Image (cartoon, rainbow, N blue to C red; front, top):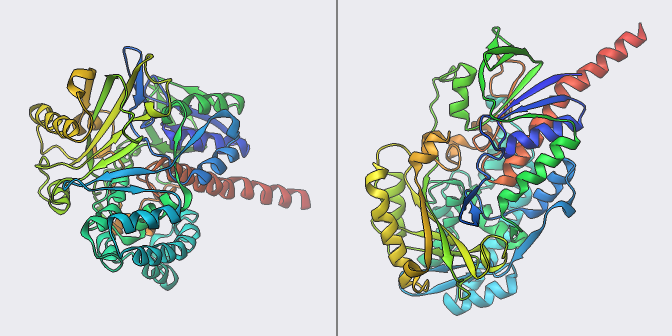
Length: 497
């Protein structure tokens, strides 16, 4: 039985450990922190709790299927459907609501953007075809041989998916109204990408919201950690918390052992879970042979609040767009400055979940896209930016928010960087063209290191909880092919002798 060490207990590490254990491997999971979960965690204070990281459940069927494959039954957690999906509030006072139902969406488009419904129908029809092309080619397939993968077939698929155009350029070919374009471009921010440069293949995110819906995990997304821990235990995975992997010992082409508490432990293979550019330091590689550096995703400034009361006039998910969305994106991704007129997202899960706060109270989560990196002095800037956003919320229906606020915690890219997120980016490396598909690090990132594997938001197929889980499946299936199939063939050869 092969002995596999998983370094890092984020969602990718836990999922990989479960899938590998169910395939017959002996797995030990090492986590440097006191809790598993990585980006999935709670902010807790004074009887309140709210998700610290991801909040929106996309691709729910994929999530359920992958968890079932990992031995987690759908009865162990509850998904709540959000419909309407969310509101988008524009600076001119206009509100556009997104619905799962196409019929309701068409009626809403005619209400807010008269004459654009035929363009929306064309957008959805084309995106449906592209989703059915892209899912098997880019979500369910690895590209271990990068340059071998960049063949005419792959390039043709990328062309059909409009990967060589930006999301914004693609939307220009469908819609006339700039606000409607923004409504279908902002979803690239879910994965830390600039809609003006991110490849149009990621337009499939906004399509998927309509086709597959948006959901909320009862108890918060981070409640899945307890579910995963129980599954790890019943599948025989040894979990070591507060136990960082200090070093990987290796020969020229193999990892021979890992160092834990200054002690070497022999392993047959290692799976590294974490932001890959930082994980390379553990591996002992600063840059790959091509001298590659990585572009981080955008960062976030996050406001977590405990509220006396509840805002029943709001939806669970809300987006507020500044006066100039293009300039806002330029400040984040080009000039890398504090947004002068920020767009932001508000999450109000207490509307559907009363388990998150004391009776009669609620929680709010506010996400403000900001630059990653260390150019901004966040200790100097965070209070001012938070004040401007809270003032904007008060003007946009969150009446008396300052008086109702019981507590406020602010998290910036500086804290994200300290916690191990690459350059303080919230979503791994950015979803740019040359960091997507065959150009993104794969689950076996170095051909020259035979038994080293990787999983996480910076590894193909990319960020987002279900997508990272899909990356763990690609990894587990690949390791099974590499080791178990080889062992079966070897045993058959021996038996024939």
